[in-house]
Amino acid sequence: ALLVAAALLVSVVFATGAFAEKKPEYTLKLGHLANTEHTWHKGSLKFAELVEQKTDGRVKVQVFPNEQLGKEMEVIGNIQSGIVDMLITGESMMNWAPLCGLIAVPYMIRDSAHMEKIVEGEVGQAIEKEVIEKVRLRPVSWFERGARNLTSNREIRKPEDLNGLKVRVPNVPLFVATWEALGAKPTPMAFSEVFTSLQQGIIDGQENPYDLIKSASFFEVQKFVNMTEHVRGWIYLVIGEDRFQSMPKDIQAAVLEAGKEAQAYERQLFRAEQDQLVQDLKDKGMTFVEVDKAAFMKVAEPAVLKFLSPELQEMYKKIVAI
Ligand code: 2Q2
Image (cartoon, rainbow, N blue to C red; front, side):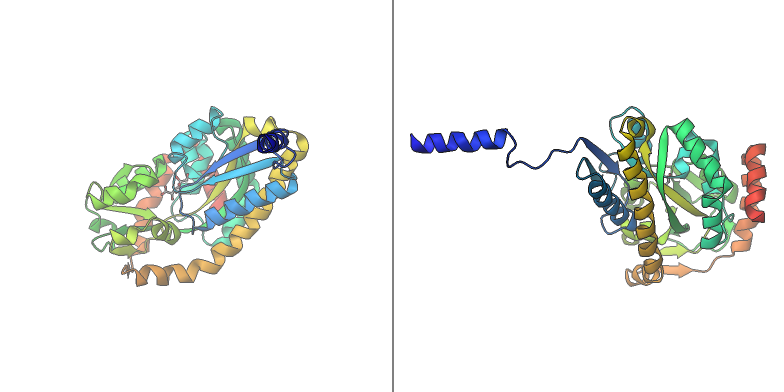
């Protein structure tokens, strides 16, 4: 009887929460497509840690790598309908907010300094405003990305070499237009399906910065990194705007602050790993191929200009002149 009484007492204590951890008032689910070694994941974990700290545990952030929370396009929809909360996303948002097409324009951004000026300046502000209004997502951080490169199992040195190569691209209409103009067969597909599709020969190639080539182990199914360096883009950590507005002002401020600090943290990791990534891919057996970048540029530029609306063409001209 004594034991039963003791057990009862213990369960009462737990039920009243005397020993239980403080339960968060808000739990935010954050998804991205990279693996747990990737700087996006580490940046997301830093964001989670900072938000928890700054809100005294009132907000908890759960991070889901490898598209575990769903494919990028699905997650955007699921944030809009309030099922999940946060995502790392960029040019795919052009399907809602045309200005995001600027993140996908080939040979537009010259280097890190140029990118920073654009994203932090007038153009970046216009993009963020449109993302909030039209995608109903609020950027809290932006991460610099390395240049995108085409991987394949045969060398590609000039556009003519593409000759119908089936290239997977993300769901980004501007990427489709660019690769069509270059002479490839672009196929939009979610990131998490690319490895298997390459393995099964459904597609012949894909294009991404070094970090994602490594993250998804594309070196196991692709031999060449053709150094097209065709797009230097960036990407946003976003939170659903309705979710954001539903939270009290002090929590909103903590989320935005944590976003800025996580951004600085991620940038350091990103910069530090760039040279190592090339070596890692070489160690995994990939061969780096010099390409005729001028030839790629010559075809890509008019194709893109034809695709962009007059408003976007104006912004493009401004960006390259900065
Ligand atoms: O290949 C990919 O899926 C990524 O590198 C994409 O650039 C990225 O996920 C974009 O779709 C961002 O919106």
